[in-house]
Amino acid sequence: MPVNADKPDLWTQDIAQSVNFYNNWFIQFAPVTYRETRINTTQQVESALSWTANLTNITPALLRQYPSVLPILRMATAPPIARDRLIGRKGVSPNLVKNMEDKQRIPPKMESTLVDVELERISQVLAQLIDKGIFPWLDTQLQPTEAQILTAATIIADRLCGAVADPIIRNAQEQRQLAVIREWLEARGYSYLPRGTGLKFNTIEPGNFTFRLNIPVNLQSGKKQVNIPVDTVIMPLHSSPSDLPLLIEAKSAGDFTNPNKRRKEEAAKVAQLKSSYGNSIRFILFLCGYFDSGYLAYEAAEGIDWVWEHRIDDLALFNI
Image 1 (cartoon, rainbow, N blue to C red):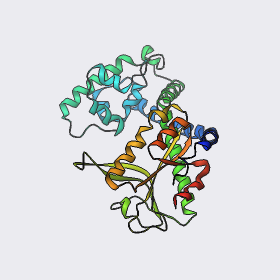
Image 2: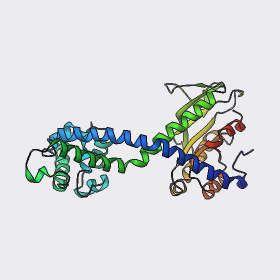
Image 3: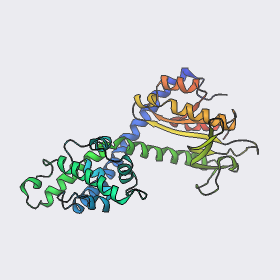
Image 4: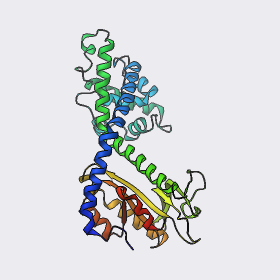
């Protein structure tokens, strides 16, 4: 039987409590997380300024040697240039830009001469658009002072952190949610299994759990198989050999808009799991933050139940 999905009379109260719970966490911890990230980012920007001789040496050779500098240089332009805008401005290779930014590397299989051509295009765009209001020494051609460098690095770090603020907060919240689940389970005799080679969701022994496990599902009537990640996989203490584990997706939100934009993702994941493993598969949400009645009604209609973090003991009602 459903635990929360069939109790709409409780949703309004739970929504209010969840919003307050999230906001209290945000006020206490999110600024610390953001500040720490900003400090680290400022140091990265200072390194980038050093590598580029304070932006006087933006060359293909420099970009090849330090691919990780690219997102910093994008934030050093006026206005800051988005990744897609950089790609589209001169037909720069998306594969090259994504490798440089996401993997801090030049694509290993990309032909060297082509890399040089693409890096030349990138360096030309960046050199033309550098924000000289932030880097006044580019006009005066004087050696910048330490104070000028620190000010410029701080401004660029703010731009970078502003661009990734939501992922920073979301990652910190996810880490905290999983830690809360782990503490609750271990207090009840469960053992954590670190991810490793050979760990499969349907062979986990009773009383064990793990995080961020990939589960293979079949697509196109079994013609194609892909892995879908699940945040928490728990095999209840008193499971039978034929039982499947409980799957939990940790969800947090700092506003009501984004969850409703993405509410179909969970339904699609459940449909894939049921298609591959049958209707007995159990998949629930672990919610904290801004999830309104529209979101809850949609998930309930899709057969998805949930536990609110402010009432984590409801996990016990799922026979774990």
